[in-house]
Amino acid sequence: MSIKSPYLLFIGDVSDGLAAKTAQGVVDWRPERCVGQMRMDGCGADLGIPDKNIEEGIAAGAKTFVVGVVNAGGVLKDSWIPIVVEAIEAGFDIASGLHVRLQEVPVIAEAAEKHGVQLHNLRHSDRTYDTGKGTPRKGKRLLAVGTDCSVGKKYSALCIERDMKTAGYNVEFCATGQTGLLIAERGVALDAVVADFISGAAEYITPETDENNWQIVEGQGSLFHPSFSGVTLGLLHGSQPDAFVVCHEPTRTTMRNVPNALPSIQQVIDTTITMGKLTNPNISCVGICVNTLALSEDEAKAYLAKTGEEYGLPCVDPLRFGAEPIVAEVERQFGK
Image (cartoon, rainbow, N blue to C red; front, side):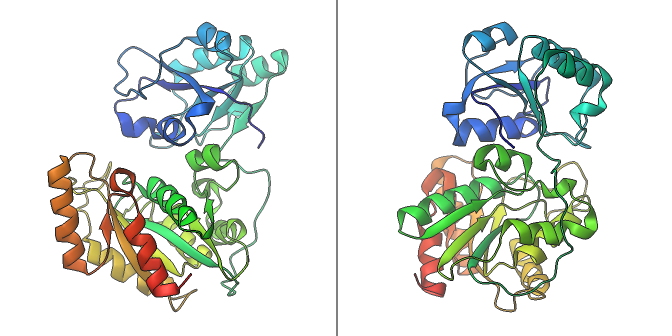
């Protein structure tokens, strides 16, 4: 997709910051592309950038109106549709990370045709994929997995990519979701791929490369989440990771949006290795990434130290303190 920047980020009336994580991810990793946020009354999220309406966004030079929200089912709320149409009438292209295709909403499709703007459905690819084959291929791959969804897999992968690059590795971030696509400008939103082809799509975005190159793969869902485990498993088999990190949020007691208890970090490590061996018999864990946003700095450091000692692995908050210990573990296990 060729999406014009900069962006005006629409987050509607979402209840919390996690529901605006697509927009927040772009702000955090590509702030130069963001001119402002547009919020409705009752919005429970704040991206930390200026609030702008459609007219102000146009005046600031924004080219694309990004629907930067996530919700169960990926639906476009009825109350948002008139705002999207207004943005089209003002001359904005529209990019959406929701499951619903913008063209499937008649008033949006009609407005886009009338005003000659582009509609970008980030989750929907314009190509088809083969089924996964599991054939070994050159190159090295590191996958972020999680005890739950929305625990920091994307941020962990981006931090590891950044710090491996600083350490001199040939490294590339591989996007597997709508937010990653806006950041990397290539990839596949795996949760919108027909189930039989998820592992094949994962193979497509992590192709054979030089033996010394590393592909850092954005994780999706959790093997233990009843809603999203199918995508997680397909990604695990298709990406054939040599290494993985487990991402965790320490204050949760149940998984997001369902009553199921969280698995332990050890359960995730053991299950990832058991299932991952199908396509890479040498898969290994190289660290634990903890989202310590809800903890003070002292609490975070104590938790990381205790957890690292318990599992005998580097344990970091890669966004808060950096991912260098994990990079060192990658070098210890795989060389450089």
